[in-house]
Length: 144
Image (cartoon, rainbow, N blue to C red; front, side, top):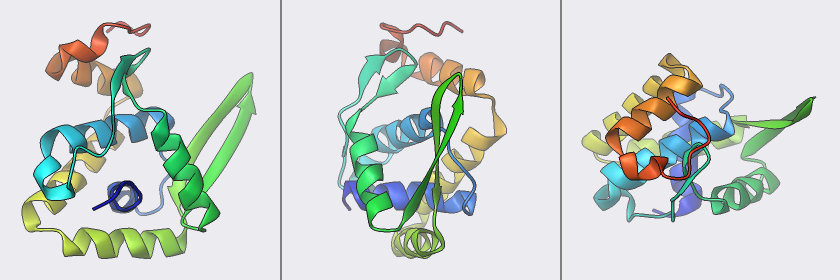
């Protein structure tokens, strides 16, 4: 699996709902950490940053997926620019195909992580990451 495929697979369970940058970063971090053997990972190089694990290259891959018509990037300018990411219909189809090709255990884990990030607030998501991976808190501006 490559970076493009894991992003499509990770976003697919949300059925085209929008993801914030924090949700995307934390979801991919959890996949890299917890199921690397199923995704040929780790695929990313996360560093402790302001809101926990962060890899700036994720945004480059998302931009490439957007150029391919697989991800929509919505920009909301309220005080400052805030982006959200959602799969296009084609991206949803491809993401679901990638998920179906995985073994049951990683497929279930990806769905569980997707459900979790939507069930909790961004603060709760970051706090959960800090609790499980305290080394990702060292450069934090967000304190739980």
